[in-house]
Length: 348
Image (cartoon, rainbow, N blue to C red; front, side, top):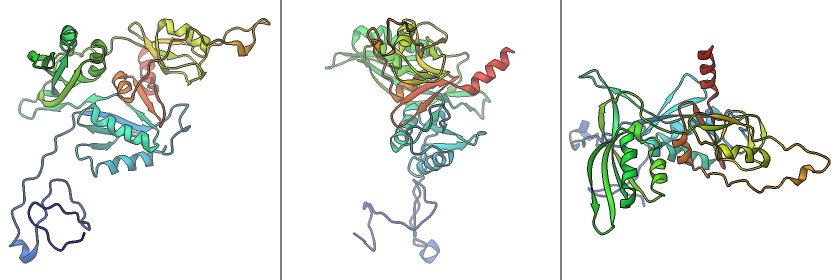
């Protein structure tokens, strides 16, 4: 209902004022503000620690499902999100069809991407990267660290500790949780090490790990790279629909993301290589036909079910030279053609 006045503790809604941000205090301007109360201290919004690029889907299979495809539609949607998502930051890039989106961790950004996907957007998403800062006092480059708490059955504790140590984590506490029978380990881990860590922990503990993390502080950057994905990708060799015969030959090299009949294109990631390094496979290959066999006689026995990759799993899987294609119903990963061009120039 409409009211003329409100008292302390009451929640009201009003309209008609521009440029009002979360944390601002509105006071009366009667008698030039002489009767106004003291404004409250503004709320400090924590700064983002992870960034990703979001842009127009430019894959050969783009435009088949989505309703919102152009850079203008994506730009309007991203900047509209800033009105209610105060921890988010959006910036223009050198490319007119790609935007840099920064947030409070990988989960913060994947929630935005999932919402846009459900609204009918088609997007091209880059891998998450950490936001570094230079300390004005020391002049040293600093990176964000997170406080991580993992609850897991005791038999998997060794695997959890090994993973966190490989990600340059620092052990803070370890013990048993009363009543639940779970072991609890607390670490400080650089945000770089957190990228892709959740899926690795769930895999090594058979899905039993309970993982909580929160931003801790900025600390001097650790020298060197942090170990990430230890396996390469299976890359599609040609364009076209995948076949049972092609997948049967490729699945011996690793785990597949696709099933027979799925459309693929050259450079698309179709599976996980069982060894380090990428491998090109021809999943569109058809079996040689003779007068003893018809084209419709292809039998689908022997094809292993593909790995079901969620949005979070796809984002965690991405390497620095890979991109994610997001559509209302599908996720496809591929090698970044821009990065491939730079690599080829470097080889020459």
